[in-house]
Amino acid sequence: MVAFNALPVVVDHGQRVYAENVKSVCQLVHSQEDRQHSHHSVRQIAREAHISRSSVHNIIKKDLQMKCLKRRKAQKLTEASKVARRQRAKELLKKYPAHSLCRLYLVLG
Image (cartoon, rainbow, N blue to C red; front, side, top):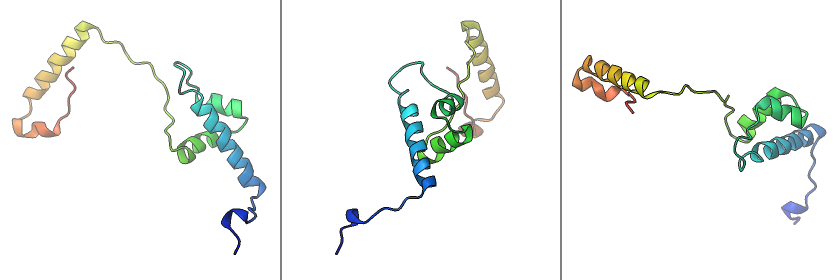
């Protein structure tokens, strides 16, 4: 009986190229983890790996089981806007009866 590892593996050209693409995208994605502020977009990874943007997106999503998120700037809240937001949330809570509050989710802090 022949051992499983000794059997010849037949891989066509497409599968080998896809495996190489997955490996290069994986290396580019994981090379960013240890460094702060070094996050590359899907478009930048595609440019560095010399493959299409949609292929990079599919590899990240399906093979690496990660999500591609677009980085966005968030607004900075001043103390005045925090107080106003908290006050509006409290007023909104007054409009609903106590038994329906279990279904509401408000961030007061």
